[in-house]
Image 1 (cartoon, rainbow over the protein chains, first blue to last red):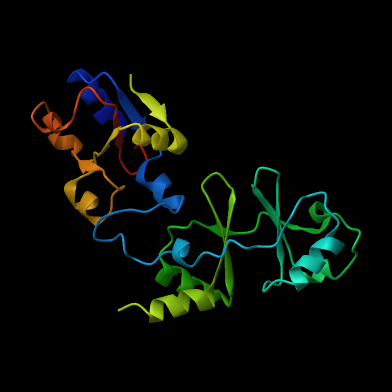
Image 2: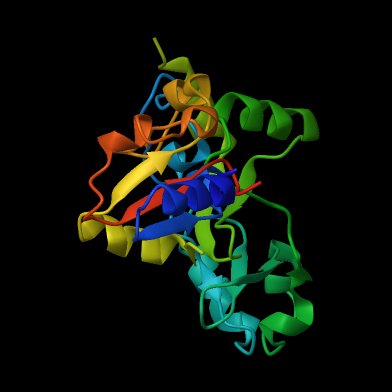
Amino acid sequence: MSPRAACRLELLGFAQVYDYVAGKADWLAHGLPTEGEQAQVPRAKDVLRREMVTALPGEPVGGVAVRVARSPFGFALVVANDGTLLGRLRKAVLDADPSARAEQVMEAGPSTVRPDRPLGELAERLRRRGLHTAIVTAPDGKLLGVVQRADMEARLASQP
Amino acid sequence: MATRIDLAQLQELLEGGGQLVEVLPAAEYTDEHLPGAINLPLKQLDATTAARLDPARPVIVYCWDGL
């Protein structure tokens, strides 16, 4: 729709017309603020925890395990230098061979959600699957953080 | 032909005084829109409705995902 609107505006004489093709879906998926009647619906971005334990692909997991042990999380996420999410290191592999490189033992391509996901729907999905945490990424695959079901349920319970 | 831009370019244009226009129907705009956007639905887009825009400043249009 926006390409047609841009063309129409140019025909009407506007000389500086730009088309944000990825549109509202992209804006929301980056967790950016909005206005309007639905703007206050609680979303994943509202309970996002950014203080994750991350590891580079070539990093030995022994050091990662130490960082995880000092954190409230039981796993680490493997990211490329540009922040793109590559995989997850679960506790079992962190407690195994400390010299193994992260990329050798990670679970590749873990499931993720976008930051604009409504909390009620996401909490219910996690509850049905017996999960407590979801990984949040931007549309370009960059890691944003994680959300925890307990945080979601607390936030939903506090809604008027 | 209009220049296609990504999120980073959009934010630069907005900082420089760009005018943001959601071209989806009014109900969708009312539900949720980008901060500061005005609504000029494609079906009503003509010289009269476009008169709300300043032709001397950049105009950025968007819909849901470009389709």
